[in-house]
Image (cartoon, rainbow, N blue to C red; front, side, top):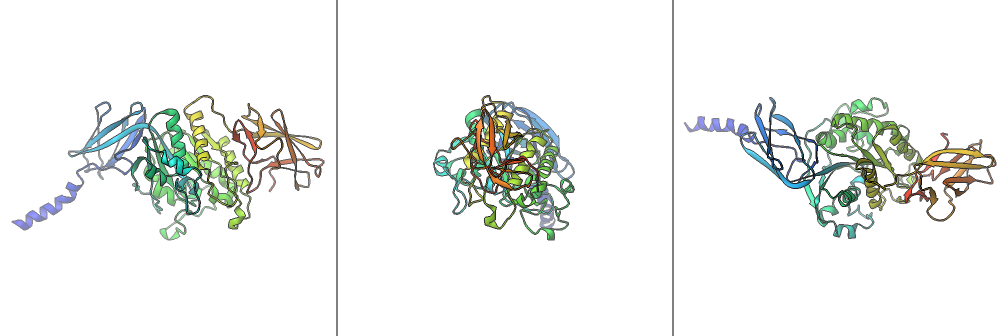
Length: 467
């Protein structure tokens, strides 16, 4: 009689193991949920079972039913910012998520300059990180880092855990994301959750699906796992392994710091990033959620053997905010490092992304935006450059003139020029170019930008479109 009983128990054990509701790692103790919305939950349990969800902030009960594979999903109504709260889920055996905060949730993605932790990389520190880390303790700032994962096909889960900001936890967390979140916390005074999905050296193509990339014939989409020659640069692999599992997690918006790997392929970047943003929005099903991104900082790419001018990639990035609604670009012309592709001034990057979010998404008054090149007029031997978003007028940050301007005549040969400002216009002239037809500002791999407006740098730009 014992043998049949053992056989019966062995058959029931898998079913018993599945009887408890389970959820992806993003839904766990210490999580932050987006406030005042219908927030998505999902997970697995027994097949065709009823899942009951109870939220402690209003004691409201929701019920949904799992499908034949045991998968279920349900949206719940979240209150105004606050907590900690609990969420109990049950299909017969209860599971409780504890210490849940309600506030603002942002996804932070990109390559190494987003991934770079507060402790920096070896021999590459983050400026001010030691002092800022010491004062980082904040139980209402929660951080989740998606573990690196490169996959041939989409997966449903990620590895990681929610951690409250402490000196130890912040030290290993994205510096750009931390400074962004810290600024939101100080201004909005609500809990903030940051989900970092970033991988150093990753290509934009790696964060996209095969369907989105069909418009870009040079993107070599893997047909088998053997085609994955690089775990972070091969098209689709990071979308599959790191982004797909978190799509649908209800959040406010995205910050993005990527582009360095695409410098040699700059010509398609504006279209590619626009396609990626629209693709993410379509799959997230949250409408035109905010997407704010960093323009790559100046750096001498010849040090790694790249002969292409990275200002061409910066130019492509500057086009995206004109092409895609609800986007904005943080300019970092004053935050580069001539001999390092990982600038130390991550606080500037994070805070400038926060300025975009606070001004555009949260409608906080009194926040300026980066002035932009608008047009040029040629008056004899002088070019007169004008700008938009420059109500407070442009100025040179290090004196009354700049040495970062060049002009060219019809021969298309650029020469250094003198530049000065009169009433929100930059005047540019060179004795070697008696009849200029084109102007460029800081249009090189490396330049320490000195053209500002209202405390924020102006992007490098050119008035020509010459190859």
